[in-house]
Length: 149
Image (cartoon, rainbow, N blue to C red; front, side, top):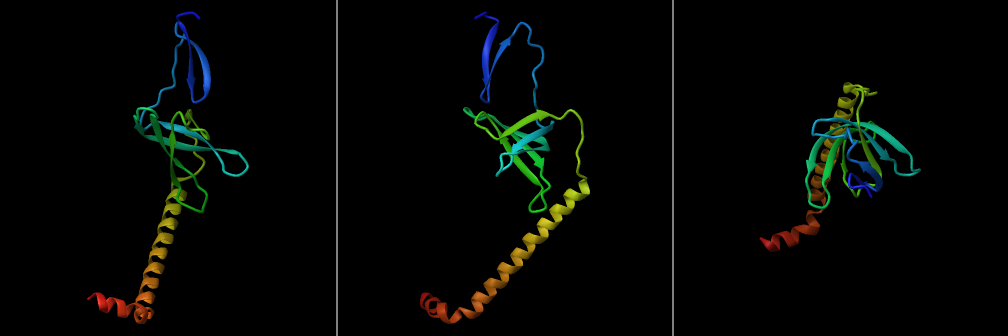
């Protein structure tokens, strides 16, 4: 093989690169806008999301790019995180060529607010269950509690 050509493998894809003619490399830095291709569970379909690179962990064996992305699904929190490294199988990243985002900021903020209210309701329910427990299970645990004191 020519000394100027090398075979490199990136995430399972082998490429022969002629370093005499190699001009451009996609490079990423924290803060870059990216497109994220994520394999959906059930059915094997892929979805595309808009995201931002928020970090890079320089692990010895698995350097990892961290991407925060928006997933509006009305059943959970809209902000999710993806971790991309050489072991990643159901995820791809690509540079965002345009700033096309289909969803509005207000919709994302509304989803955060709904998630916060839901969690606050869960906390209130747990507090009520705790009070119920303390009130009605006193007879059961009262003796053992008194014995410890």
